[in-house]
Length: 67
Length: 192
Image (tube, rainbow over all chains, first blue to last red; front, side):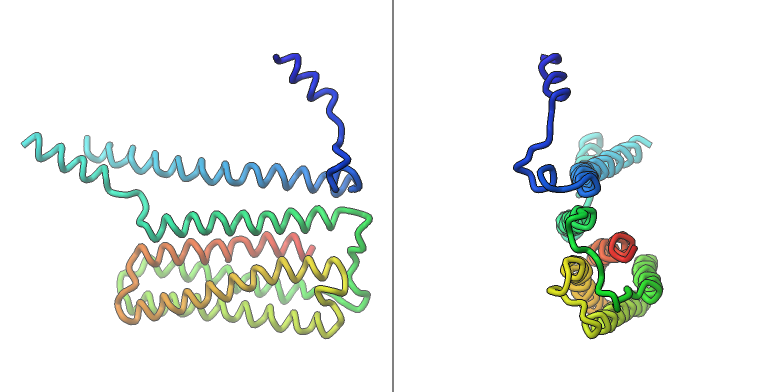
């Protein structure tokens, strides 16, 4: 299975149906990849921060109950 | 005795982390954040494409320095609103929230006057692709800034009636801080 994914990643090529991959130059492709990465990471970061805040809230309240 | 203690612990554990108002505002602010991120993404992709006619009209220069001062005004407005939560008295809160709203309106008015100057020089949404992207991005922020300033005024009126509680103020803060903190990013992306 790993070999399959390795093969798939090694032989990937631009999708020409995509307006950025097909016609965009390097600068625009870089911006596309960068902002796509950012748009992926930001929601995960927001949810992680919320989860951490809730965890800390309950951890602190249980510590207060014990203390 | 043990039963009453454990029931008290259960009640304390069931205390919500956020009030409904704050949680709703967090969700709303998150969707707004993603909206601005998508606009920034579109702006950068179009800007970096060499095939795009990205240049400004030759006689147009973006008001970088005025906008820098205006950015400071907006940041100051956010700081004033943060300071308002430290005040217990409704009278004090009214003063700080009103000051934040006033600075919000100053920001919008200065931005508006800049736009009028740019439009008079011939830069409109239809003149160039840059113009379209510029007015879309900065205009979206301005709409939010107007809505936020009105919300702050409403908050100040609540405080004058002694009804601005901590949770409502926190919800206001979350929305306004999103508007305040996203602006330096937009300024950097659009003006440089």
